Length: 98
Image (cartoon, rainbow, N blue to C red):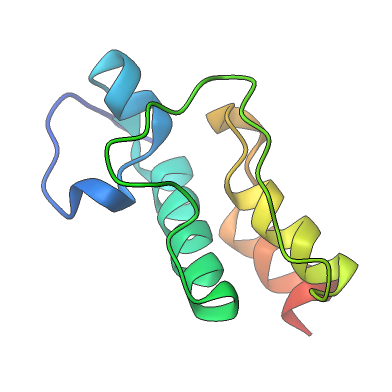
Protein backbone atom coordinates (compact mmCIF):
# COMPACT_ATOMS: atom_id res chain seq x y z
CA UNK A 1 0.00 0.00 0.00
CA UNK A 2 1.33 3.41 -0.95
CA UNK A 3 1.84 6.36 1.41
CA UNK A 4 -0.17 9.44 0.39
CA UNK A 5 0.90 12.96 1.33
CA UNK A 6 -2.05 14.73 -0.28
CA UNK A 7 -5.78 14.32 0.04
CA UNK A 8 -8.44 14.41 -2.63
CA UNK A 9 -11.91 13.77 -1.38
CA UNK A 10 -14.40 14.78 1.23
CA UNK A 11 -12.65 16.04 4.35
CA UNK A 12 -15.27 14.63 6.73
CA UNK A 13 -14.42 11.13 5.44
CA UNK A 14 -10.65 11.59 5.82
CA UNK A 15 -8.93 9.22 8.24
CA UNK A 16 -7.55 10.27 11.59
CA UNK A 17 -3.94 9.92 10.46
CA UNK A 18 -4.52 12.48 7.69
CA UNK A 19 -5.89 15.13 10.05
CA UNK A 20 -3.18 14.48 12.67
CA UNK A 21 -0.09 13.79 10.58
CA UNK A 22 -0.82 14.85 6.99
CA UNK A 23 -0.36 11.37 5.51
CA UNK A 24 -2.32 8.15 5.09
CA UNK A 25 -2.20 4.76 3.43
CA UNK A 26 -4.95 4.08 0.89
CA UNK A 27 -6.33 0.77 2.12
CA UNK A 28 -6.80 1.70 5.80
CA UNK A 29 -8.15 5.11 4.73
CA UNK A 30 -10.73 3.38 2.55
CA UNK A 31 -11.86 1.27 5.51
CA UNK A 32 -12.10 4.41 7.69
CA UNK A 33 -14.31 6.08 5.05
CA UNK A 34 -16.49 2.97 4.82
CA UNK A 35 -16.85 3.05 8.62
CA UNK A 36 -18.02 6.67 8.45
CA UNK A 37 -20.50 5.77 5.70
CA UNK A 38 -21.78 2.69 7.56
CA UNK A 39 -22.26 4.74 10.73
CA UNK A 40 -24.23 7.35 8.78
CA UNK A 41 -26.39 4.67 7.17
CA UNK A 42 -27.34 2.85 10.38
CA UNK A 43 -27.29 5.74 12.87
CA UNK A 44 -28.45 8.59 10.64
CA UNK A 45 -25.53 10.88 11.45
CA UNK A 46 -21.80 11.34 11.05
CA UNK A 47 -19.94 9.71 13.99
CA UNK A 48 -17.93 12.88 14.70
CA UNK A 49 -19.23 16.42 15.07
CA UNK A 50 -18.05 18.96 12.51
CA UNK A 51 -14.92 20.63 13.79
CA UNK A 52 -14.47 18.02 16.54
CA UNK A 53 -10.84 17.22 17.22
CA UNK A 54 -10.74 13.42 17.37
CA UNK A 55 -8.29 12.19 19.99
CA UNK A 56 -6.47 8.86 19.97
CA UNK A 57 -8.45 7.69 23.00
CA UNK A 58 -11.82 8.77 21.57
CA UNK A 59 -14.63 6.44 22.60
CA UNK A 60 -17.15 6.00 19.81
CA UNK A 61 -20.73 6.21 21.02
CA UNK A 62 -23.19 3.88 19.25
CA UNK A 63 -26.93 3.38 19.80
CA UNK A 64 -27.77 0.52 22.18
CA UNK A 65 -30.33 -0.91 19.75
CA UNK A 66 -27.60 -1.67 17.21
CA UNK A 67 -26.60 -5.33 17.02
CA UNK A 68 -23.27 -6.26 18.61
CA UNK A 69 -22.02 -7.40 15.20
CA UNK A 70 -22.81 -4.04 13.62
CA UNK A 71 -21.26 -2.14 16.54
CA UNK A 72 -18.10 -4.24 16.27
CA UNK A 73 -17.92 -3.70 12.52
CA UNK A 74 -18.18 0.09 12.84
CA UNK A 75 -15.68 0.20 15.71
CA UNK A 76 -13.18 -1.91 13.78
CA UNK A 77 -13.50 0.29 10.68
CA UNK A 78 -13.05 3.43 12.77
CA UNK A 79 -10.10 2.09 14.74
CA UNK A 80 -7.74 4.94 15.58
CA UNK A 81 -4.74 2.82 14.53
CA UNK A 82 -4.73 2.40 10.77
CA UNK A 83 -2.90 -0.95 10.90
CA UNK A 84 -5.61 -2.36 13.20
CA UNK A 85 -8.43 -1.71 10.72
CA UNK A 86 -9.69 -4.75 8.82
CA UNK A 87 -8.86 -5.39 5.19
CA UNK A 88 -11.68 -5.36 2.63
CA UNK A 89 -11.57 -9.15 2.61
CA UNK A 90 -11.93 -9.30 6.41
CA UNK A 91 -14.70 -6.73 6.24
CA UNK A 92 -16.73 -8.80 3.77
CA UNK A 93 -16.40 -11.89 6.02
CA UNK A 94 -17.37 -10.02 9.21
CA UNK A 95 -20.64 -11.24 10.82
CA UNK A 96 -21.94 -7.66 10.72
CA UNK A 97 -21.92 -7.85 6.91
CA UNK A 98 -23.87 -11.11 6.70
